[in-house]
Image 1 (cartoon, rainbow over the protein chains, first blue to last red):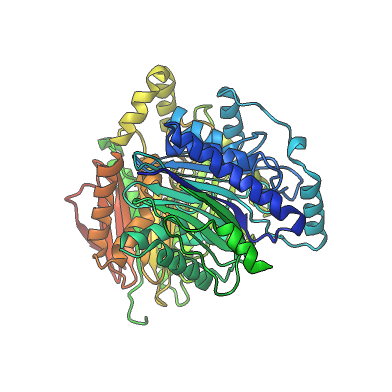
Image 2: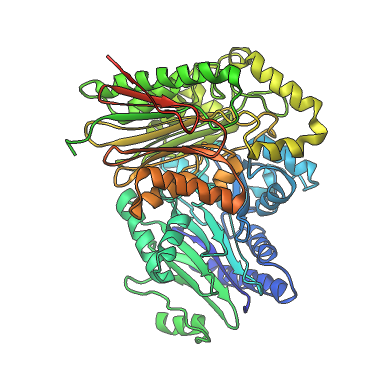
Length: 318
Length: 317
């Protein structure tokens, strides 16, 4: 099996022009880091962890540094990591003071008897595991402070649904997924969305495939979106059809148009789709593909050995 | 949809329930079923109100690991999880690791109805409770001598905690999460699950109960399910959602529940129990642990049991 990886930087947030290129470069760096690890013999689990870490370390995305601020100006983060072989999974919810929640999620999976830790318990475990404790100030970037002020001023949540995520398949055909987020701007402290809800923010099963989702967290959780996509694939639908059916089902039942997902199936086929105006993503196997915007009818078809998509997309835009 | 008979189905946790707890467990689920059914039977009785009432009855009953009677975490504290979900619009509310709240299922319902969110955890959940005027009760109100006994045994054998958790897979430690599923006269469905978790769990541990699709799931187009057993295993297979998926592929509710538990055992080595109801009001219940107290009422008949072979019947007035 040729290793492959796909990542997303979230949907529902219209990236300002001056950030577009920076985001694309960061997403490309993320898949390159993940694939390199697998080519050197690393597992898909290692690859998703490193890929998500690259995105968590960038202030451009709503995860790790750059996380959205809660209504009380604090930072609480959620993350999930899952391995498709034995369905091993680890997650953290509403954790504070951890620079890379996806790393902590992996430690929950590998160093505890549990699948999920939240709040103070999660932070305590993080310190016990030797992860650096980081103050809230590190997370309070000027961009996020401005976003919270704007959100509180108009008394509405602005979304800011740019959760980050990754799905990878390694040379052994093992699939892993990872998702990480700071939540929605102005959310109540203690609010947990879809990310750490197994099957909503992500899911991985070697016998079907792996998924990471992004969008309106509450609505994703209500339809258990990642698992829903895989249910359709189990019934023989293509990745693309499974994504379309699931995202449109979510829109029909909950009314949201903020949603997207990335997928790799058990044969190594890659797919992604979104019903929001934008979802930034990048994928890498032999060639690197990346994109951000969607037009009404436009969908990506993934072909083995296809053209370098990003370049042709720019030609279409201009 | 007018043909549906209002029905409620309750479980009181799947585990190796010792003989001395059998009577209290069976009485408890029977009472909860009656409480829930009384709500369903009212002219405007809803499945959502019915499951909430039934779960409150179980939370208030010290025989079960939910609300009063919840087991203690590694620090000797009580941390509670609960979920409630309705099937018409897939609205859900859940709370995890909340402390000193008598009825977590009521708080979960407030999350569903009074916030834009589906889940609140930890201190944030307690702050919300205060804002909603939900009173905090002292920990001592919730802690029973049985819970303390289990915790002392756990503390004594802390070195072997890994074995204790492995044994939990076989249901040898308390897993008496409680749950309810119901369908009302309008054909609307609801589910709810509530728990104190497992003895000696790490502070902040979240199990399956409050996670949508794991501890419970509900969709008027398919059915409703509530789960119990080894939480970590349930989360890995998203058990409640899996039961509904099995129903969607055409299986009877009973077979759907059995197949889902078989899969969980085979794929991740976990044991547990499931109660479910489809949108025609047909129930299913199954468990792979030694015992699971359950009770159901439809029309004027109460059925209940605790061993796999049990099927007792009574008429209710």
